[in-house]
Image 1 (tube, rainbow, N blue to C red):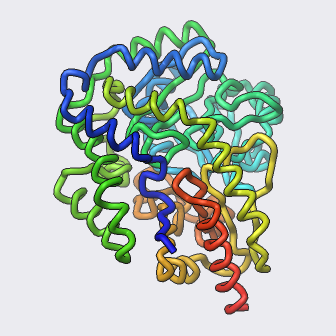
Image 2: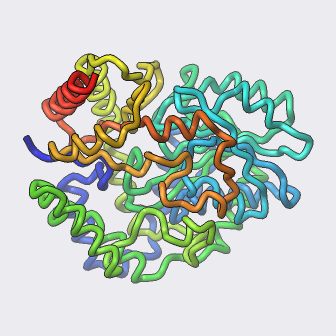
Length: 417
């Protein structure tokens, strides 16, 4: 059976790799061009929203939104206790204070615990539909309105997902999407901020204009990612973990970048943040945007296979809710850590280490104290981080592979009962 990777640039197809290769030799298209505005228009039209702004990352979009709100310094921002450092650091970099709220076993922020964290200086509620699973946004809005909170939707995992028949990203005062290498669609890097608020839109546009464009070397690193991943790294996954080792070497040599910079794991801000989206990544993003519905339909199909084929006891499956998109299929072990089964699957050439294990704030080597998280304040998040297995649903996982993954999980669980 062909090896499976759960997180290594999962959206890359042949046409994406060849487009990146072509663009690598067209440096006059790299920084400025018409595709940036075109991508912004694509998002605005798809969501039915007035304003969209492209940046070089989801972090930059969140910084743009937060700093455009003109909040008092050290205002409290409520954020999920199970999230990424990339969602927490922009709050701190904007001179605001992240307040972590524990989650439920659906991986979304607990609304009961949320209300307990609201104080007089709480200004913002950052809502994260983890792995594409929508939270009840009507209830969220009721809580926000009652407490005069600004809703910002972190839709990095959920482009195309809905709540009560309405697209996520259209409920709050603003929202942002990520086009990172492992998101719903990928431009290797990038983010889109959206809003219907005209005054806020003007401020975000000014923030965008004042942000710098990435350097040519940084852009080259992003373009090389789909090329080297598709033609060199992924094929070598058939030889055990040679592909992963190649990736690490290329990153260490500075030929490729990591998804999260080492400074961010220490709570520090890399020099390229915040920044505008370069035109060449907008070209990649627009090609992926055309595949959005195909990608999400495939994810639902693979999720249905897991739901039907995984029959072992002691596992908690995600709810097959209407409106979700299954960026990943999060599987929870009810009473045991995930590490042994992940090691077993790795021997079967199923590589599921996607960074969402072992720590409530990922990447798992993030220094929690540096970003303001105190261990023990979100016990459900911390427990789930030890018991979580994220199964791949991306376009490069076939139904046959999905059934094989399910069978290996069933076998491991039955052998260890």
